[in-house]
Length: 136
Length: 130
Image 1 (cartoon, each protein chain N blue to C red):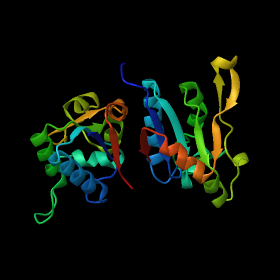
Image 2: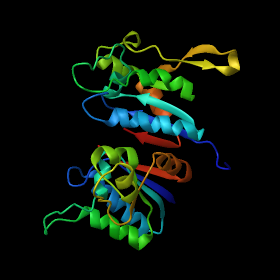
Image 3: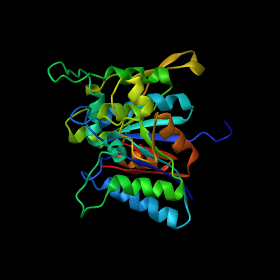
Image 4: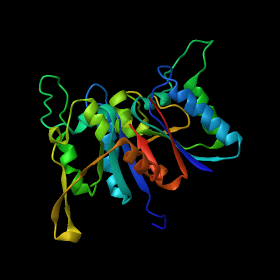
Protein backbone atom coordinates (compact mmCIF):
# COMPACT_ATOMS: atom_id res chain seq x y z
CA UNK A 1 0.00 0.00 0.00
CA UNK A 2 1.47 3.31 -1.05
CA UNK A 3 -0.68 5.43 1.25
CA UNK A 4 0.90 6.68 4.43
CA UNK A 5 -0.11 5.17 7.73
CA UNK A 6 -2.78 7.30 9.34
CA UNK A 7 -3.55 7.92 12.99
CA UNK A 8 -6.94 6.36 13.61
CA UNK A 9 -8.86 7.21 16.77
CA UNK A 10 -11.98 5.42 17.95
CA UNK A 11 -13.74 7.72 20.38
CA UNK A 12 -16.02 5.83 22.74
CA UNK A 13 -18.53 8.06 24.49
CA UNK A 14 -21.28 5.72 25.64
CA UNK A 15 -21.99 3.05 28.24
CA UNK A 16 -21.45 -0.54 27.02
CA UNK A 17 -25.10 -1.56 27.29
CA UNK A 18 -28.32 0.37 26.80
CA UNK A 19 -27.45 1.19 23.21
CA UNK A 20 -25.53 -0.77 20.58
CA UNK A 21 -22.90 1.92 19.92
CA UNK A 22 -20.16 0.42 22.10
CA UNK A 23 -20.47 -3.06 20.62
CA UNK A 24 -20.69 -1.87 17.03
CA UNK A 25 -17.72 0.42 17.68
CA UNK A 26 -15.71 -2.59 18.82
CA UNK A 27 -16.68 -4.40 15.63
CA UNK A 28 -15.16 -1.55 13.63
CA UNK A 29 -11.99 -1.68 15.74
CA UNK A 30 -11.60 -5.42 15.15
CA UNK A 31 -12.08 -5.11 11.39
CA UNK A 32 -9.92 -1.99 11.26
CA UNK A 33 -7.05 -3.79 12.98
CA UNK A 34 -6.39 -5.64 9.73
CA UNK A 35 -5.60 -2.39 7.92
CA UNK A 36 -2.26 -1.66 9.64
CA UNK A 37 -2.98 1.90 10.68
CA UNK A 38 -1.77 3.64 13.85
CA UNK A 39 -4.78 2.88 16.05
CA UNK A 40 -5.85 4.41 19.36
CA UNK A 41 -9.04 4.18 21.37
CA UNK A 42 -10.28 6.81 23.79
CA UNK A 43 -12.92 6.45 26.47
CA UNK A 44 -14.70 9.55 27.68
CA UNK A 45 -17.96 10.27 29.47
CA UNK A 46 -20.01 7.12 30.05
CA UNK A 47 -17.62 5.41 27.64
CA UNK A 48 -15.33 4.69 30.60
CA UNK A 49 -17.93 2.16 31.80
CA UNK A 50 -17.00 -0.01 28.80
CA UNK A 51 -13.75 -0.92 30.56
CA UNK A 52 -15.26 -1.62 33.96
CA UNK A 53 -14.05 -4.81 35.63
CA UNK A 54 -16.61 -7.45 36.56
CA UNK A 55 -19.36 -6.70 34.07
CA UNK A 56 -22.29 -9.06 34.50
CA UNK A 57 -25.02 -9.14 31.88
CA UNK A 58 -26.51 -12.46 32.93
CA UNK A 59 -29.89 -11.03 33.89
CA UNK A 60 -30.23 -8.62 30.98
CA UNK A 61 -30.12 -11.05 28.04
CA UNK A 62 -27.25 -9.04 26.56
CA UNK A 63 -24.02 -10.54 25.32
CA UNK A 64 -21.19 -9.66 27.71
CA UNK A 65 -18.54 -8.47 25.27
CA UNK A 66 -16.20 -6.97 27.86
CA UNK A 67 -13.67 -9.77 27.38
CA UNK A 68 -13.18 -8.54 23.81
CA UNK A 69 -11.30 -5.52 25.17
CA UNK A 70 -8.79 -7.93 26.71
CA UNK A 71 -8.07 -9.37 23.27
CA UNK A 72 -7.30 -5.99 21.67
CA UNK A 73 -3.60 -6.34 22.47
CA UNK A 74 -3.48 -9.41 20.22
CA UNK A 75 -4.81 -7.23 17.41
CA UNK A 76 -1.97 -4.71 17.96
CA UNK A 77 -4.46 -2.27 19.44
CA UNK A 78 -2.36 -1.14 22.37
CA UNK A 79 -3.24 2.48 23.08
CA UNK A 80 -6.39 2.93 25.12
CA UNK A 81 -6.72 6.47 26.47
CA UNK A 82 -9.01 6.89 29.45
CA UNK A 83 -9.99 10.36 30.51
CA UNK A 84 -9.24 10.98 34.17
CA UNK A 85 -12.02 13.51 34.72
CA UNK A 86 -14.62 11.13 33.25
CA UNK A 87 -13.57 8.46 35.77
CA UNK A 88 -13.63 10.92 38.67
CA UNK A 89 -17.03 12.32 37.73
CA UNK A 90 -18.37 8.77 38.02
CA UNK A 91 -16.62 7.93 41.29
CA UNK A 92 -14.24 5.54 39.53
CA UNK A 93 -10.51 5.04 39.56
CA UNK A 94 -8.12 3.04 37.41
CA UNK A 95 -8.49 0.16 39.87
CA UNK A 96 -12.13 -0.25 38.86
CA UNK A 97 -11.15 -0.98 35.26
CA UNK A 98 -10.06 -4.25 33.68
CA UNK A 99 -6.30 -4.67 33.60
CA UNK A 100 -5.58 -4.49 29.86
CA UNK A 101 -2.13 -5.35 28.58
CA UNK A 102 -0.23 -6.11 25.41
CA UNK A 103 3.03 -7.89 24.69
CA UNK A 104 5.78 -5.80 23.13
CA UNK A 105 7.62 -7.97 20.62
CA UNK A 106 10.34 -5.31 20.33
CA UNK A 107 11.02 -5.57 24.05
CA UNK A 108 11.32 -9.34 24.56
CA UNK A 109 7.52 -9.69 24.71
CA UNK A 110 7.36 -7.62 27.87
CA UNK A 111 3.81 -7.21 29.12
CA UNK A 112 2.79 -3.57 29.07
CA UNK A 113 -0.30 -1.64 30.11
CA UNK A 114 -2.63 -0.66 27.30
CA UNK A 115 -4.58 1.86 29.35
CA UNK A 116 -3.18 5.38 29.41
CA UNK A 117 -4.78 7.62 31.98
CA UNK A 118 -4.87 11.17 30.62
CA UNK A 119 -6.39 14.46 31.67
CA UNK A 120 -9.06 16.13 29.59
CA UNK A 121 -6.49 18.65 28.36
CA UNK A 122 -4.00 15.92 27.45
CA UNK A 123 -6.67 13.98 25.58
CA UNK A 124 -7.56 17.10 23.63
CA UNK A 125 -3.96 17.17 22.40
CA UNK A 126 -4.11 13.47 21.50
CA UNK A 127 -7.32 14.02 19.52
CA UNK A 128 -5.81 17.04 17.81
CA UNK A 129 -2.97 14.84 16.63
CA UNK A 130 -5.22 12.29 14.86
CA UNK A 131 -5.89 11.98 11.13
CA UNK A 132 -9.22 10.18 11.42
CA UNK A 133 -11.65 10.11 14.34
CA UNK A 134 -14.50 7.60 14.42
CA UNK A 135 -16.94 8.80 17.03
CA UNK A 136 -19.29 6.35 18.75
CA UNK B 1 -11.30 18.21 -0.86
CA UNK B 2 -11.95 14.49 -0.87
CA UNK B 3 -14.56 13.68 1.77
CA UNK B 4 -15.99 10.51 3.19
CA UNK B 5 -19.21 10.58 5.19
CA UNK B 6 -20.38 8.27 7.94
CA UNK B 7 -24.06 8.31 8.92
CA UNK B 8 -24.81 6.76 12.30
CA UNK B 9 -28.49 7.50 12.86
CA UNK B 10 -31.73 6.48 11.23
CA UNK B 11 -33.94 8.70 9.06
CA UNK B 12 -36.74 10.80 10.61
CA UNK B 13 -35.77 9.75 14.14
CA UNK B 14 -32.68 11.93 14.14
CA UNK B 15 -31.41 15.01 12.33
CA UNK B 16 -27.99 13.44 11.69
CA UNK B 17 -29.14 11.93 8.42
CA UNK B 18 -30.57 15.27 7.20
CA UNK B 19 -27.37 17.06 8.16
CA UNK B 20 -25.30 14.45 6.35
CA UNK B 21 -27.42 14.81 3.23
CA UNK B 22 -27.25 18.60 3.22
CA UNK B 23 -23.52 18.50 3.85
CA UNK B 24 -23.02 16.06 1.00
CA UNK B 25 -25.12 18.11 -1.37
CA UNK B 26 -23.38 21.37 -0.44
CA UNK B 27 -19.94 19.81 -0.74
CA UNK B 28 -20.73 18.36 -4.17
CA UNK B 29 -22.27 21.65 -5.34
CA UNK B 30 -19.07 23.40 -4.24
CA UNK B 31 -17.02 21.05 -6.40
CA UNK B 32 -15.70 18.75 -3.69
CA UNK B 33 -15.49 15.00 -4.03
CA UNK B 34 -17.33 12.51 -1.84
CA UNK B 35 -15.64 9.16 -2.23
CA UNK B 36 -18.13 7.25 -0.08
CA UNK B 37 -21.13 7.59 2.20
CA UNK B 38 -21.12 4.81 4.78
CA UNK B 39 -24.25 3.98 6.74
CA UNK B 40 -23.75 2.41 10.16
CA UNK B 41 -25.78 1.66 13.31
CA UNK B 42 -29.42 2.69 12.67
CA UNK B 43 -28.09 4.71 9.75
CA UNK B 44 -28.59 1.59 7.64
CA UNK B 45 -32.33 2.39 7.72
CA UNK B 46 -31.58 5.18 5.26
CA UNK B 47 -31.25 2.42 2.68
CA UNK B 48 -34.63 0.68 2.72
CA UNK B 49 -36.99 1.24 -0.18
CA UNK B 50 -39.97 0.28 2.01
CA UNK B 51 -39.94 3.75 3.52
CA UNK B 52 -43.20 5.61 2.84
CA UNK B 53 -43.24 9.00 4.53
CA UNK B 54 -46.31 11.27 4.38
CA UNK B 55 -46.70 13.20 1.11
CA UNK B 56 -45.93 16.55 2.70
CA UNK B 57 -42.64 15.39 4.25
CA UNK B 58 -39.22 14.98 2.69
CA UNK B 59 -38.47 11.50 1.34
CA UNK B 60 -35.07 10.87 2.89
CA UNK B 61 -34.40 7.56 1.15
CA UNK B 62 -35.36 8.81 -2.32
CA UNK B 63 -33.35 11.95 -1.69
CA UNK B 64 -30.21 9.86 -1.14
CA UNK B 65 -30.96 7.72 -4.20
CA UNK B 66 -31.36 10.80 -6.39
CA UNK B 67 -28.16 12.37 -5.08
CA UNK B 68 -26.31 9.12 -5.74
CA UNK B 69 -27.64 8.93 -9.27
CA UNK B 70 -26.79 12.53 -10.01
CA UNK B 71 -23.25 12.37 -8.68
CA UNK B 72 -22.44 8.67 -9.02
CA UNK B 73 -22.09 8.43 -5.22
CA UNK B 74 -20.86 5.25 -3.58
CA UNK B 75 -23.39 4.64 -0.79
CA UNK B 76 -22.53 1.66 1.38
CA UNK B 77 -24.71 0.04 4.02
CA UNK B 78 -22.79 -1.97 6.63
CA UNK B 79 -23.65 -5.64 6.24
CA UNK B 80 -23.46 -6.55 9.94
CA UNK B 81 -25.59 -3.58 10.97
CA UNK B 82 -27.96 -4.27 8.07
CA UNK B 83 -28.46 -7.91 9.00
CA UNK B 84 -29.47 -6.94 12.53
CA UNK B 85 -31.94 -4.37 11.25
CA UNK B 86 -33.43 -6.12 8.25
CA UNK B 87 -31.89 -4.30 5.30
CA UNK B 88 -31.53 -6.90 2.55
CA UNK B 89 -30.26 -7.00 -1.01
CA UNK B 90 -30.42 -9.85 -3.52
CA UNK B 91 -27.27 -11.53 -2.21
CA UNK B 92 -28.24 -11.22 1.45
CA UNK B 93 -31.73 -12.52 0.65
CA UNK B 94 -30.30 -15.68 -0.83
CA UNK B 95 -27.53 -16.11 1.72
CA UNK B 96 -29.86 -15.80 4.68
CA UNK B 97 -32.88 -17.55 3.18
CA UNK B 98 -35.14 -14.50 3.23
CA UNK B 99 -38.09 -14.09 0.89
CA UNK B 100 -37.68 -10.40 0.16
CA UNK B 101 -35.19 -7.64 -0.40
CA UNK B 102 -35.52 -3.96 0.32
CA UNK B 103 -32.27 -2.20 -0.55
CA UNK B 104 -33.03 1.17 -2.10
CA UNK B 105 -31.62 2.39 -5.43
CA UNK B 106 -28.04 3.57 -5.26
CA UNK B 107 -27.19 1.72 -2.04
CA UNK B 108 -25.05 -1.37 -1.78
CA UNK B 109 -24.37 -3.67 1.17
CA UNK B 110 -20.76 -4.30 2.09
CA UNK B 111 -18.42 -4.78 5.03
CA UNK B 112 -16.89 -2.53 7.65
CA UNK B 113 -13.63 -2.61 5.71
CA UNK B 114 -15.29 -0.07 3.43
CA UNK B 115 -15.53 2.34 6.37
CA UNK B 116 -11.88 1.89 7.29
CA UNK B 117 -10.88 2.29 3.66
CA UNK B 118 -12.91 5.50 3.53
CA UNK B 119 -10.93 6.81 6.49
CA UNK B 120 -7.67 5.92 4.79
CA UNK B 121 -8.46 7.21 1.32
CA UNK B 122 -10.37 10.41 2.10
CA UNK B 123 -8.83 13.64 3.28
CA UNK B 124 -11.67 14.19 5.77
CA UNK B 125 -14.05 11.72 7.33
CA UNK B 126 -17.21 13.46 8.48
CA UNK B 127 -19.23 11.58 11.11
CA UNK B 128 -22.91 12.45 11.48
CA UNK B 129 -24.50 11.01 14.55
CA UNK B 130 -25.76 11.54 18.06
